Length: 208
Length: 127
Length: 258
Image 1 (cartoon, helix red, strand yellow):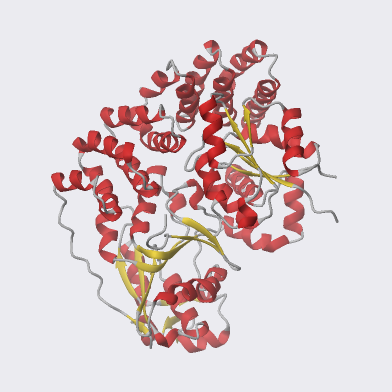
Image 2 (cartoon, each protein chain N blue to C red):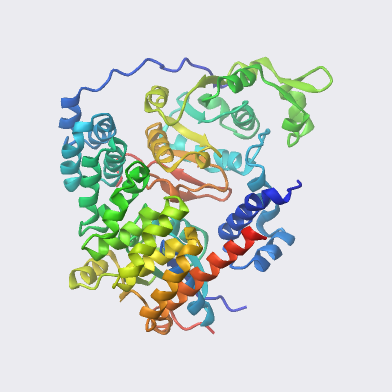
């Protein structure tokens, strides 16, 4: 019988000590950096070191592990570090930061309205995604508040895409007003009509 | 039967994908969708694609990282024309897209007629 | 299967998933695909509704891929007598790891040339006990040809069959929560991991951590198979996607590649 059964090495791992973890975040060996990036999730004070290492990290997988750890640390400080990466010129870092924020935003919902009113258009666009995972009524309120004053068509487009999925009937007047304001934009007209139709059909179905 | 021209639309916004699909199908193209670069790489393994329409900001794998990955693949995949879309319009953004392997760049929101026009230019007009 | 009105959302979701997975823009086009059983859509459709069911040789196209393609690649760097390690996590009541074992014995010509280690792990210790006992009813065996049942099972009473001792004692079962690095790391690295139909039940954060854990449990160049309707594209960019004749699987890059 070529199938063999061996005892698995179930010995518990010794906990990594903080200073060696932080040191290994910038090791020359990718495997060391990977292990350190993962271990840093258990060290709330590692945020600054993680962010610094991320800025220079060339391996995409190590970057992913670093972003995961920042999300798992889940402090205001780690959230701020991720928000800084949202402002990066590098699309890869922006995507990594947004993915990480998405998984931690549930515990830090007060950040969403703040980000939705950021001065930077790009931050507002990306932050609409964070509203997608909030409960429907909350997401609707936040995105409608944004829509009411938003001048940038692409930000509105991002908000409308989320509202089309999770928005409730309360969004309808805001969508209608937005359609008026952007009546010269064929895409926004299309998006608003589609979102309106979807909200109406869901609302009707639930009453049936 | 004529093989259809297939366009892979890669964008995380479902309304954007629907908008492009409506225009491109209306012009006779076959459209396949992916919501991020990873899903797009999977779709490329499954069916022949004649044009990529790729947004930049997407979860899990952004458009430029995706394009760089495609350009490293075998010759057939690496030479698929790519139209990159983005909300950004600075010269540095065009340059980054070119460096990643884009053939053309359109700034969002994109006009349907223009999309169809450039699709035809980049991969041929469907019958 | 019968679904009452209360399950409308459940049914709608699954239909939409299949429509999306098949690129069907309209229900009409999907329905045609279903009616004509294009590319085995009926089985896909049924699978989408019966994700929780487990039985021997479920999704056997992945088993076929294992012997046809995955192991062929894995042994390129191995010598005769080297280990081939396969992990089923989660393993539930054991049908999957025993299926892997049986399939290898029946279908892999090189099965005697390597030391094959098959481990089944699950967070639920009760199902592990059932797996170790190796006793199954008719439903679990429904896809097995009679000669396989004859060869690998002994009847136990009128309704049950038990895996023969030789096979039963060669598969190891032990507890592990794939979201906990401290529990997964000790298992070392595998050539192939089967992680089917469990990630869909996790929240996004847990899914991501589990993907990172399982990445560590793969040898460079090792493969991970998810459930047929699952994809790493919504979970993690760590893996490369590979398409083989019988399945799409994910791979940890070989050492030294980007």
